[in-house]
Image 1 (cartoon, helix red, strand yellow):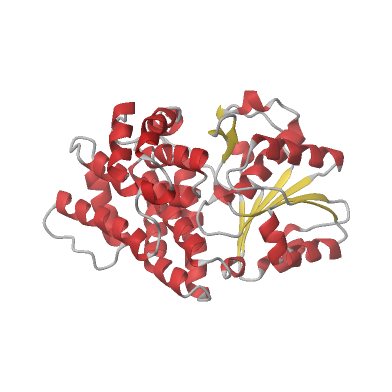
Image 2: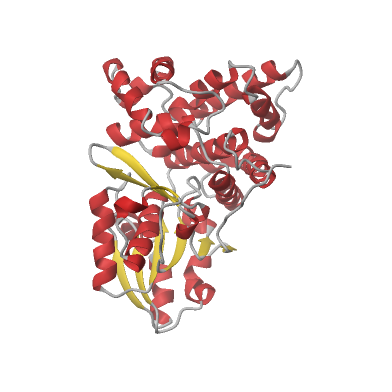
Length: 390
């Protein structure tokens, strides 16, 4: 068996209503000075209020930074770091979707270490130390609460990442009740995002692809595939919401250790340039990238996808050999997006055919992801995939 390393969040709390008793779960005392990193929508909906009340009742000093936007910018991150330093916080609590959690991770790192962010970009370059860090997801998609990655938009809509076990949180607190109010389109897009994490982790050619990640990916797809339609169309179903949140976390653990690949690489220019939500960006290119990978019979991608098919879609026809099962799996994924009401073509989200060459060039900047893809992707290949998706 090949050697591997597996990193994950050391403590995970999963319980309905847990956010309203967060002080007890985190053993908060009056010595704690917390920065809560979130967004304006979370605050307006009052989702964070029970957690804030719990922390205040325990005597903690609370500062709220509620300025995180989708695809958070470098300016937003640096503003959060400034607020953390000005208030001498010793604990950062990310509360929200993947954007808020990503900002919280790097705010804890930069406020705690004073290191230069330019030195931390990339894989394994962060030095630390960081402040204490807790992450509370409010969507079932990114798995950011158990991943050592933070993605920030810099410059001309370019996305850059820090990948380091240092930014795994001390605690991930998962409260399915926080996801009950998610609208159908958000539930659908984030759910597909989590499925992509599991699929790419399972098939990744990264040297650290490992048995734990593959097992987690399988269980994640079982939970996600069986519950995504109920969660989208019956949003108050607590069992489905719980399954989606747990599936998202398991997929996050999988790809945190067996990294994602070309689906994400090609999705980033869609989100960074056209401000399409990350989950939808992934969904738009997912079937096209998988078909591209599976077309090369030498890389094993078709075998991986065929193996995942019955876990993601109970009852799928698995007769007739690998190529047929793989094709059915990809067709079911494409059909799932349409069934859930998501846009299925790049043109549907305002991308023109003339935009595709620049997107292909931008995708090539995601070398840290493309190296994990089962099949090599050139700029010409990326352009051809975009054209098929357009």
